[in-house]
Image: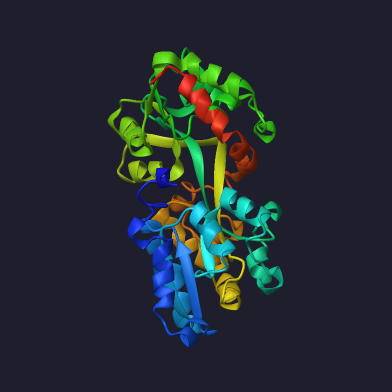
Length: 355
């Protein structure tokens, strides 16, 4: 998930999952099994720094629980850790696809939703009340554009507009190999976002090919954002968190939230976690809308709980996915389907002679 940029999921290899083992094993056995302990494995970078400041440390101070943090992992390491029975983390911050895969393999504890206060559950969409994971934040793939090039009612409103180079002349940009814009191309063909999945990958790649020299592909989103900032591209496909700093810097940039795709993250309890009771206590603490809201400004990612937006200033909320004012304009990605066709997407990109 490094594509989410400096305010998102930056993994620290020096704090890999093995570091969690060293940290826990260094403590006396009795202490490691103490009901007063909690080990959280998250995603590192400025995202985890914000979690630590606004979620982890306040919980530890309020509860008296001794909370330890680590970061840096991947799906394979998590799977091995849990399957081996050597579970060193009580709570893990994971994406929707990792949640689905681990749950399907029977490697997660069930969330005891009866221990989550009613005030926390009111704003959570029903589809996000996962049996095996608690929803926290989400980021979104959006269209961003130059407001000088496309002012007012001349702004692009759909992915069909993104592909319409006659009505909306100008250079486009996106990353390519790591996440080709196949979904956006599918929506340019058929704009019914509710019926997006599954879609014809061959048709999507043919649609991407139509853009020809009107689109420039980059290796990462930092470069895509720079193209928009410098005026080298007029319209881009990018995570919302990459756009917020440009707007804050006074660049002539705006987000089109129509037909955006959201990517949720969750806290999950690994099967056999030694302190799962404290993990549930943490979830019952962090779930409060006013606490979830504290991560919005420092990370540029939106709480999944809509009630949290009551505690987020309007100027910040308008740049976040999950904002009640724009949430209905998008949908969650189908990570299960994308996981099944990941290899086909890679093959389709390899055939596309545009790099």
